Each structure stands twice: as C-alpha cells, then as structure tokens.
Length: 343
Length: 168
Image (tube, rainbow over all chains, first blue to last red; front, side, top):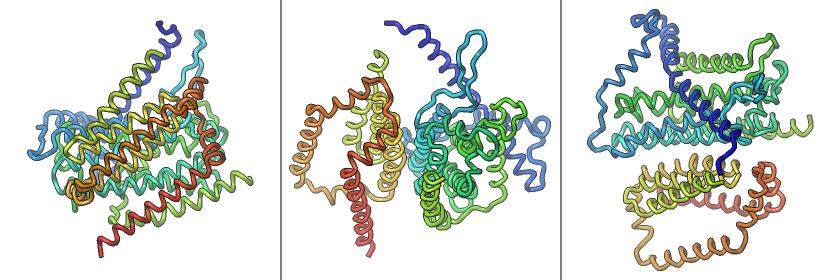
C-alpha cells in the first residue's frame, strides 16, 4: 500500500520547493520596501532612509521590529472573526499563485539523471490559475474594510471591489491575447513559444503585442492597487482606506500581500510578454538570471510610476477601465485572431 | 488512491458544512463568506475529477467575480429587510415545492447515468483537456450554450431595468 520511492521523492522535492519559494517570498518585501523608499527619495531629490545602517539598508529590519512590538488593536464594534481573518485572506492567495509560476527551464542533474524543474507544478491552465487565485486577494480588502466597522474602511473596500471587477476584465483580456499569440494556457509552453531572439517575444508580436503589453501593465497596476490606481487607500479623502483600523502585524500582512502581488504582476509580465527566462542574446547567462533581471526591471518600473503620476479620480478610473481598455481589448482579440488564422 | 479518497472526504465535508452555514448564519456577510468557501471546495472537487480547467474557471467566475458583486450588494442594501419584503412567509410552501423539484432533478442526474460519463473520462487517467471542452461546447452543445448566453443577457437587461425603476 505504501507508495514507491519515486513518488515519495517527488513529494519531498515538491515540499522543498514550496519551502524555498515561501522563504523567498516572505523575505522579498525587506529589500523591496528599502528600494521603494530609496526610489521615492531620489525622485523627490532627497536621500531617502540613511540613518539605520549604510544608506539605510537596515531600515526594513527596524520597521519590522517596530511593527512586531506595536499594540495590536481590534476596534470595539468590529466583526472580530472576519477582522482577524481578512489579512490572512489577503496574503494567502498572493503566495499561492507562485505554485504555478515557472522561473527557469528544467535542467537534468548530472550523475543521478533526474530532471529538476523550476516550478512547483505545471498546470496546463497555469495562466488562468494565477489570474483566478490572485483575484481572490480582493476578499482580504473587502472583508477587512467591512469588518473594521468604519466608514472610511468600508468605502475603501467598496471602491477596490468595483475597481478589481472592472480591471480584472481587461487583465483577463490581455491574458487571452497572450494565449492566442502563444497558443497555450500553460506558462511553461507560453515561455517556450517565445524562445529564440528578441523578436520572438510576445511584446514584439507586431502590431498587437505592444498594445497588449500596455493593457496588461495598466490593468495590472490597477489590480495591485498601486498609484495611479490606489483609490482604495486614498489618504486625501479616505484616511488610509480599507486598512485604516489595522495596526501592528495585521497591517504588515496587508503590506506583505501588496508587495507579493506586485512581484506576481511583474513575473507574469515577464513570462507572458518579455520571453520569460529566454535572453535577448545568447551570452551564456543562466536563464534564471534573465528571469530575475526582467522581473526586477518591471518592479522598478512600477515603483518609478508610483512616485511620478498623480492619482486618478474615481470616475476617470472607471472610464479608463470600461470605455478605453475593454473596447480596445475586444478589437485586439479580433485582430489577433485574424492574424493567427491568416499569417 | 487512498490519498485522493481522504481529500475527497475533506472537501465534501467542508463543502456541506459551509453550505449549511450559508442558509443558517444570521449575518448576511458571514453567509456570503460561507458560500465562497463552498464554491472553493467544489473547485477542489473538480480538480480531483482531473479537470483543472473547470476548477480554475469555477474560482475565476464564481469566487472571483460573482461573489464580489454579491458582497457588494450585501454591503450596500439592507438584505434582511429586502428579503423580508420580497419573500413573504405566505410564499413558503412555494419555496418548499421548488426545493423539492430541484432535489428530484439532482437525484435524477445522479442516478440516470450522467455521472458515469464523467468517471469514464477520469478513469482513463488523463486530464480533461481544454481543447476537448472547447470543441464540445462549440459543436455538440452549441444550442444549450447559446440559450444560456441569451438567458444571461436577459437577466442582465432585467437587472438594469429593475434598478432604473427604483431610482425614478
């Protein structure tokens, strides 16, 4: 009745991978928060954090210690259960999506002749899985906003619910575009279809590729609630939006989820449009470094955008989503389809 | 196989318990959350049936979109009062009849052999491919598919009309 040695080995390897991915993801916000504050500082012509460690490099550690030792406040009339639950609901889907994200092509380990893959699981519907699972993070925001029993938090939650629904359509359309260009729903196959040189990448699938990429970036930024689309945490009119009542570790779980979501969108952009781990030129750099590099460039882009653009007004946000992105996407689906048939 | 069996038991039990919570909990928001949990368990059951596409679509559409709108509605309107206005106690026998019809229907589907079709595919060992579903949907089942889309469109127009009337 016991499974054979290969199955056990498979499970062990998978668990190790899950462990490694989790550790990396939970630690990623440490350099990312530092980088974000540095980017913010330099754009605003000030040095950013400088005091803790050289160039403020230990600032995230100090922030972390501060957050751990802060008092964890639950508002008196809050819905206790959902209030506790919401940050977790927000973080878990953000981490879950990385199950399906491949970071490099598989290698065969010498001597024991076993194949090592750089993903936890290759779904044949990987791209859909990531969009569906990532979209669930919204519940953390909505339920957190509702459970706080505060008008600001509630309004923040409602705003983001409407925003997510609107932009999820555009984001899914951009995924449909990629699926049509690459002819597969599996992320591994999507990346493989972009192998070769620079012009095999989906972003250079002229003339539709670059437009799909722009739609993806805009919708992606809206999905992860970042400026210019962070209407749910508009300090000016909503105090801090859905997490106004949250403090200490619960607050940091929301921040963690947000950073993880940003990394997800960056990796998705890399895999779907920028050729994944394929380099533009073959100069002997291992594929995984191409992948990390491209992801980092996208993350850096998101950060620069955050401190460059002002926030949209709510009606503008809805107009962009429904009257601009979705009609363009519909036309593009048609064009891409015709190109697939006749080219 | 034994692992799969245990997983099935877990998903099924959680699905039934949370479905029971949907109809018994007092707070409508808690009901909605319980419904989300139920839908997720059903998605997990689709995975056990080797149909990742259906599972993902279930999460995508029901959990990702429909339930968000549900919560939206629950937040914005006093659901309890609206429900009391719309479903008066005198309609209760009607509700029982509809529930009974639905029960008979689902029992019929289970025992008429429609399920056998499913197990035959899964017993073959392979996953249900997206291409197979797409082809079936747009050839064999094109008529029901179109009917469903027309019904959905009618529902959408109906919702807009109802919302309009109230405003004026």
